[in-house]
Amino acid sequence: MRIKLVVNIKSTETALNRILNNETMIIKLILKFLGILFILLGILFIINPEVIYVWLEDNMKTSSLYIFAILFRLSLGILLIVAAKDSKYSGPIKFFGYLAIIAALVLILIGQESFQGLIALLITDFRPYAHVSGLFSMGAGGFLIYAFSRRINSQSHN
Image (cartoon, rainbow, N blue to C red):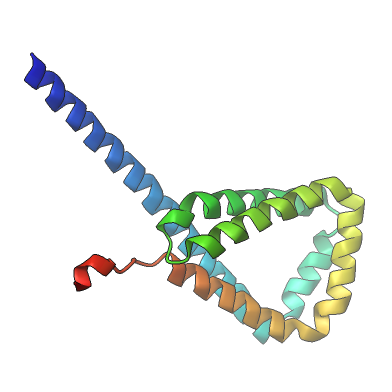
């Protein structure tokens, strides 16, 4: 009876570890996908930034852009914080996660009207620097992909 109970506990632990590993792999995959999206947006900013600016101007007045901005930052922040321990740079990844959550909270606090004003100001101020923004976007995407690529086990080199 005792042996059977120990075996069941160990098999349950193994099953839980598999589930947690699968969730971690899914989160890392989502973050790598976001990295690819950041790179693609960066390329678009370099090739034809007006597409993004026109889209932002057309959707600036809708509440869906405001809600999306908040939900995206909250989701990104939570994903980064949860996955930070499995990245190559856990400190900076966790920092960016908390920063994204703080940004979402600030957007909530300023409200939709101030958000629209902020977007209008950013479009005006950053339009001449769209190519630089594209490079930053591509760098952030590359960093996400690299940070969540397979970690090299330092013990295997000994």
